[in-house]
Length: 637
Image (cartoon, rainbow, N blue to C red; front, side, top):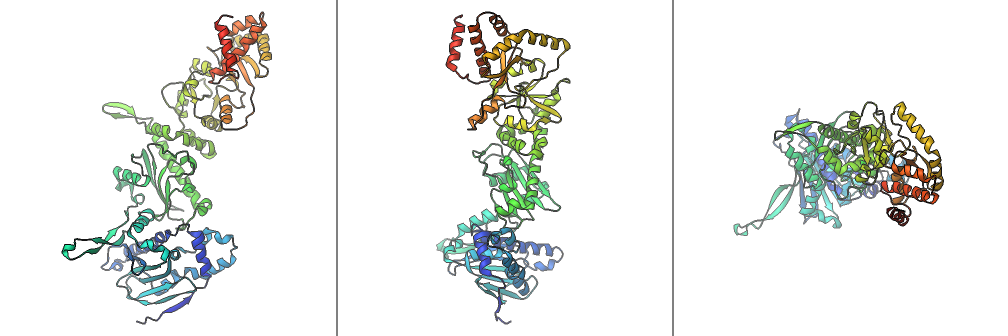
């Protein structure tokens, strides 16, 4: 066999393409090992598939594997596989991808800015050329399965490459990198171990490294070489669920998330059709310290079991940033970048599937909490969803606010404290408990639960037996305002507008009489508070308190106004409506004062307004003045 070298000239501007590879395609040169291991894995996959119908391809070598050989003396790192191998023509074709006329045409058509477009470059399969990130010379020796011929390909990535006949004992491919001086760290055992663990731990074929170990010198041998497998080779998500145990899922979660606790729940899925996708998503049991860092993501992206991104934010919306796990796509290119992910149709498909599967898991947990199980002879409800909600509900609410298309689905997952006093409840459960005559779902906002529970705004609602949801998280009111309604039933704030409660003809007539009887008193109160309130009127929501302040139906609530102002927003002061309870002793006393002591009437009116503010958990504008009025009242003015 002749060893004469065949010299082939690159047909494209190799240096320019390689510059793009180095400067745009790969931000870290360590990915060269990921790319070459991925190529080796593909060669093994091809052989394994063909061997199903052509068993003779395997010959006597049935153990498919990838091997790494570091020669410190020669300064070379070899990535070896016993896969399908390549013929002479395939070497020229596959490793000459960069020289195809299509690439030259591409390079000529791209502007300077477009040459930075990784999406276009990635279409031309330049992953192999990442080897030149760390090597100045690359030698490839390959032997096609069942062939007797071996061929060598070699290049310095300048103007040409050489192909010649070579020797290899069996099928497969050796890619030998003649490392640059500043890349000799990749000849050391531990950097190689770390790179394989980081990027290729879940490649299905064993990745072995030849290492030297100390032995007993008394036996005449100081060191010996041995093979060690570096990867776990357990792409758990690609295996059927029926083959996996609870313990395997838990172990995998702990390994990938670095969480010492078991996950709360998980979903393992596979999507087939136009796009192929597998995934394994987990719900942690406890919120991480960086939960509110919206730049953090917990889902790792793989492409054909090769690690690509550690925090794939592009496939996980911010409001699901608590999710942990892996997603493995068969459709994305291995050299995918964040820029590609941001605008790729496949990415949008993946993101939709991640959202769909996560919400389905949450709905399953929510349904589970509605059924009873028997434990130790007693019936009880599983509380996994409420456990999740207490840790991550505040983040899930962001989705209900931002994702208009998903609001109906997310609304069913929301949970609130309520006047029922039996813990968190959902909107669907609330609706099931509504009396037949109740037409709305009622809410009240407050800074804390105790303030909401004591709110005067809900007195009439509680008297009628209507449940009220307490919005005590700063985002709650934003979410409820965005929802507007749930399953056809409007969501109504008890502190805004008229409640329009059902009443008999007698009740309506009695209220109308009260309004007429108090008209002069109300007008006088309004004149005293003109700079502070928009209107003073008879209430339809108070039964025990003398007065309360409400906002107009479409105005900002006092709670939201304070929240915005605390966040640094310039919110103009709103004049609210003072509602008074005509049956309360204080209002009766004011009615009597209106006919006599004008100065006392003014003080009591101002005091009533300040008291209404305090009932909401807000200090009056002049706390010292309020205290003096209370002292005077206590002294029996």
